[in-house]
Length: 278
Picture 1 (cartoon, rainbow, N blue to C red):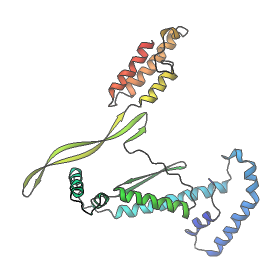
Picture 2 (picture 1 turned 90 degrees about the vertical axis):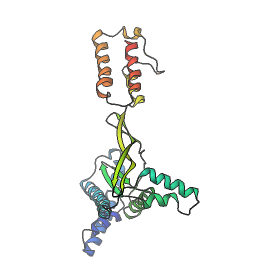
Picture 3 (picture 1 turned 60 degrees about the vertical axis):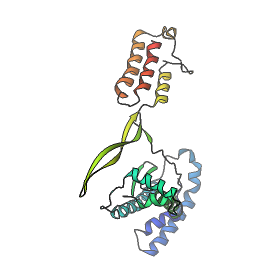
Picture 4 (picture 1 turned 135 degrees about the vertical axis):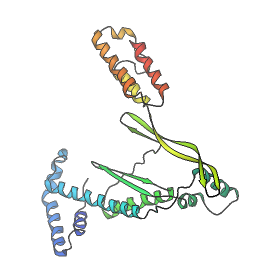
């Protein structure tokens, strides 16, 4: 990405308080662009080869963006109340329905952001991509996403492209990680006696990526493009050791690596394709 010439000056201004030096730095950057601008355009096909000053400014630029987001995260973490008890999710749903029934002026989003235990921001970076995870009510999440996008675009001239990931499933290490809510009946002891309640927990379960494994079978010549198993005549030109090695490779992938998934029915169906082919 190409940095605006004024952006590095703003970055240095947060670290250096000498105003004449900043003006001199601005002149140096403009002279650098004038001398080497055409050279960069001529060698645009070798964009990976950058000068040391470009890499220095790029690293400083990324560091400043990350540090400011880290400051926001630490401030939000200190403001979280530690004494607030998490409300029961079922009771919140009942209250929302009751509110809609009696046509109260309190909106559902108000219930969402008032009965909140904590609000958290998690930030991570890999190469030129950043991952920001918000935890909390939808009202605060949308608000902070809007603020961060404006901050990166107009303060740092940072070209951002927002890609929202699905929160119910994530592809990780060959599995699809799904989040499911598990409810348990619990008994709470109070000063007045015992009362029954429901505790809801979220657990992560691994699932098999069926479509990717089907493509793997097609790559290893166990099935054709239509999804049907390859006939045994297609294996006649191969040696026995080659056929056995392919079968063992696929079978170990299914039986050993993906045996911990919760959708075992899909795994059993995939195992029939190598059997019918061989």
